[in-house]
Length: 507
Image 1 (cartoon, rainbow, N blue to C red):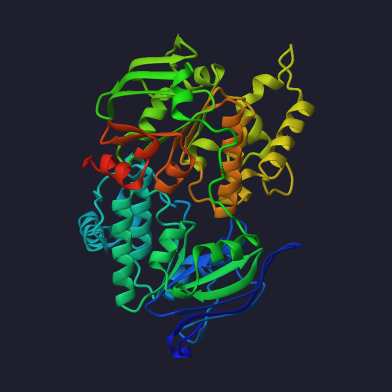
Image 2 (image 1 turned 45 degrees about the vertical axis):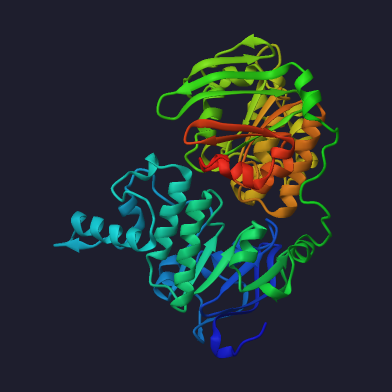
């Protein structure tokens, strides 16, 4: 990496971190320069999060040296890291849902008067931060009432509210729409112009190539190489990151499905004029056995709300037919019993019980299959089935008894997927199935999705990543502000056509 050493604001040399006998980092090195975006690229489990937690004062390094502004840097806790000039926005939200946006942004730094929190000053200060960042958020709203995307923006505001020399952004766009991501990119540009160094972590390769000045690849806890963005290609970065060439990001369909042949088959699921006041209106679509029906729309389009209604989590008017029978699910349990699975976008709160074991999380949706005639669980069969799914999805875990919360984000997402695969669903709803998942893990998940489709499962794939929708779907339903903009197939499946309908400017 070029540039004078005086440009370097953060220097990491030979840093090692061990947890017992396991070395999470080995001789890590990194030079981060002022006014530049330095992307840290690696698969889940490569050591990125461990390194960030060392910088944030959550963990301490086992050995090695770190300096910030040419001074030794070894924070004892996150508060000390913040005081020394390092701000971090973690991928997994650290907000308190029962507090307001303002209270979350300024937590532990609330303005006080006579020893008490000054609410007026608190709101004014939070408003000033949100306004400066250009975020469309009401600071008096409870965080628990916000969407996942809005919470992500609050997390970003909280991190950037510190006067930092180095800002770490860990998957900051993982649940943002394109327009919200543009707000963040503008903020990053302003940080660079003020001489702030930004460490950026993302799995979105197009985003990385747009934002980065420098890119460091790590693999299996070790430094691989650092590159100037202009001197490297996406294909080369992927090969460095996963240690192998990945010829295609999206594996080909196992069986070719032409639109014509799909139309000849009776639909597994047919939805007509599904409506829920204030959320979505008059939504109609069909999906056949072995078909992957993509759903695309900007945040607020109502995609996830439609899926929640189909899964019995919300009431809605309209007609839903499953295998040519009218159904109305009053709860998720009823939907599961009839063969519908749902990989939720919010794995931490809705998809997993993080304190429970890998085995328990995988088998919990299919427990009736492991219950004997007298109500006793056949634990041997349950464990064997969970072990099979761990192997099938290449879930990296020490054992089936490891708490799910101890695994990386990508492996947690695979557990959620394994949970539903065990129920052998007729219809599988995948809501942002690869959010926050690295390229290698994505490829494995895509192969599983392709295999399920080949076995006859009807799949509803909801994604904010346009390349993912285009790369995986047979047809695509586009939603805009709670209504169905279009259902596209064949030559109409282009980025331009999909975005035209998603933004309401259909051509």
